[in-house]
Amino acid sequence: MKIEFIFISFGLLISVFSICASAATVFTNATVRTGVEGKQDQSVVAIDKEKIIHVGNHIPKYLKDEKTIDLDGKFVMHGFTDNHVHFMEGGAALASIDLRPVNSPKKFTQLMASYAKTLPPHQWILNGNWDHQKWGGMLPNKSWIDPVTLNNPVYVIRIDGHQALVNSLALKLAGIDRNTPNPKGGIIVRDEHGEPTGLLKGNALNLILDIIPSPSENELMKQFAMAQDLALSLGISKVHAVTAYPSETTMLDIFKLAEKRGIMKIRAFVSTPIESWEMAAANIEKHGRGNDLLSYGGVKGFIDGSLGARTAWFHDEYSDEPGYYGLPLNDPEQFATWMTKANEAGLELSIHALGDKGIDFVLNKMEELGKGEVRKKRFRIEHFQHPTRMAIKKLAELGVVASMQPYHAIDDGQWAEERIGPERLPTAYAFKSILEQGGLLTFGSDWPVAPLSPFEGIYAAVTRSTLDNANPQGWIAEQKISVEQALTAYTVTNSYALNAEQKRGTLEKGKFADFVILSHDPRAVSASQIRNIQVLKHYINGELVYEH
Image 1 (tube, rainbow, N blue to C red):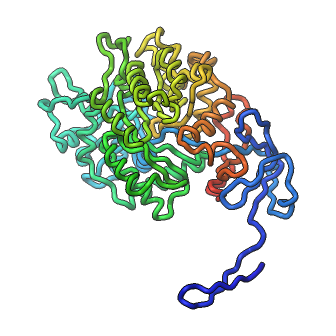
Image 2: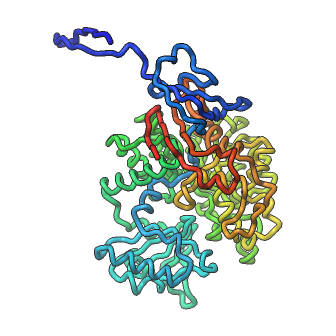
Image 3: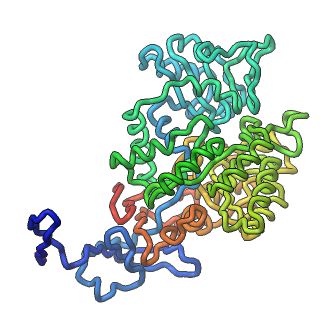
């Protein structure tokens, strides 16, 4: 150790201690998946502060005296990136009622009654994430919950976020009655007498969202911390945080607050609503695009909804609802204008498009905006669940990123054929076809719509075994991909999609030390065991952020 004396401007003499040796850590005896195409596994990875300084099969002489950790053959890989997560909604869901386990109307009412008893009067009951397919497909009704929620307004969403059940108190507070017209892109479901049933679809959700009180800063930070803790425990080093509703224009402020308070450890790229593109552009002009921990400059928009809510937009009618094609959640002409303006402002486009007509609309507009250089734009289509074969080919040719969430395939696969029939099934969640065409495939969760765990996503992508166990060999088995391809979609391609491939995505010298140590190599265990893999340690920026 040496002592350096430095004179500062106001004449005081201070001493600064600097350690001559580096603070490197060398991990040895590991199975290191670098993620670099064509490169075999290595056994040593060394880090110094926030960067990787060596990856190989030996320890260089200059690192011989550094701190060494023997991993006893454990598997090391780059940390996961989640391409599509409703981070704050997920945190709020962790802090609220969970209706996922409900499998009957009776249990729905019982769970709601039990939860309501724990709350003071007037406090909203939110989130929920119910799935009516678990009890046979009957949609819930306000009559299920009105008797047990007399003093608490209710707004609980379906797992896809495109339908919600509210009680009579919430309807009253929002001024919704039999005379309230459907908003554009939304439906107020009514009974045979014209009375609202309590079920809302699409943009009708905004009628309630507009009156729900905003949580306090401390409540938001608690929700952020809960979401972050779960993500870090699952090996997720970075999230593409997207908004669920047009009214949510403050999510970036929440992330900035978490960063300011020193709470934020996970990396994030935040996209704000495309309707607010002018605000996003002004924010970039004033503050730039953030830093390596928190970056922004993207916008997210909805052209359609979901298959489960029958709001995905198709060229042909729904098989179980003749004459109905789904619907655009926004006026297509207005939406095209938003895309144009956002692109001209230099914002990154992430567009939710699920049905084939919605996908074609977005692809055509992206081709127009790209002017022959779409690939440079790194446009993303969120979900890309039910494209035509021509759309898959066009996606690859243009270089548009397919931002997909594989768990949806094993969930929706239980009932998707009822909605769209067998003719449209071959290209549903077409992971393999996208890769075979040379397309850009990224993976994530869509949490809290689906589980946050990337191991659940990998399992879904490689098995396509639906949750009802009705397809043990895989639903549309020809679209299964390998574990290696799934890992690439969660790391390398995700980093490219978020313009971070020079700094992240692979374990290489000079890149950020974002990596996980796993209990098992996902490539070496049976498919059924992938879901049970645990994260033993998780490093971001060279800092240990989680330990099992």
